[in-house]
Amino acid sequence: MTSRVKALLFSWAVCFAVAFGVGKAATFSTTPIADAYVATGPSGELSANNYGGGGALGLAAPNLPLGEFQTVIKFGLSNVRNAFDAQFGVGLWSVQSVTLQLTASSHGDVIYNEIGPGQFNISLLQNNSWMEGTGRASAPTSDGITFNSLQSAYINNTTDEPLGTFSFGGASSGDDSYDLTLSPTLITHLLAGGDLSLRLYAADDSVSYLFSSRATGTVANRPTLIINAVPEPGGVALTVTGLAALFSVGRRIRQK
Image 1 (cartoon, rainbow, N blue to C red):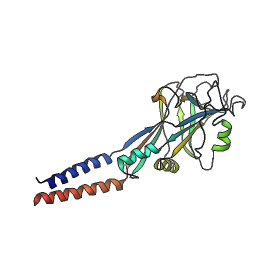
Image 2 (cartoon, rainbow, N blue to C red; image 1 turned 60 degrees about the vertical axis):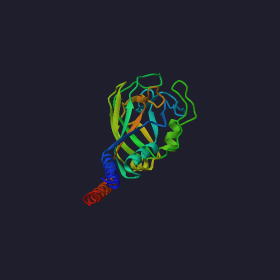
Image 3 (cartoon, rainbow, N blue to C red; image 1 turned 90 degrees about the vertical axis):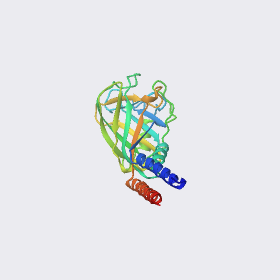
């Protein structure tokens, strides 16, 4: 076998391995670059406080004894895009599913409502400019997002997109996964590799959900966005065409 034939066969083998990998779905997970909960308190006295530095996040219905809670979580997506570009080729992939994983946590401070089951919403915030802040349940600050600023400066009911309504069973421990609706803007954010902000808030009058934040000591318990992607048909077809061409050339050389 000549060196030219060996080189062609080696190239064919490499391309086959690439095609085998490209044809499979891939998964990438990422944790937040910022998160915070905001609260009203029983009579609105906590609405100007920031709670971005603690180890817990939460959401609660407005009519509960200790008031309403909402949570915002921001993910940086550049690593997600780069990972899929490296595996499939730049832009030669599409998003198959997006899942938010949360780890329920126990009641830890008198500020929180008692944990209770119910329904909650997740929506995509178009405005990513909010700041996490350093406040804690026992030591709130004013250096980041608050309930008042979330309502007045960051929520836009015209452009923000709903990503689903979900059930919380009332547990104080364990992981739960929520499959988000693949809205056009969510897909755009993922493909562009920019920042993505999610808002979590009550969908009924009973839910009270506490879960770990990015500041929690156990990395596995931090909020996690899990993205599954698949190759675009065009990218796979191009690879297969290249394989066929190499195989044909190799066969003609061997016949000489």
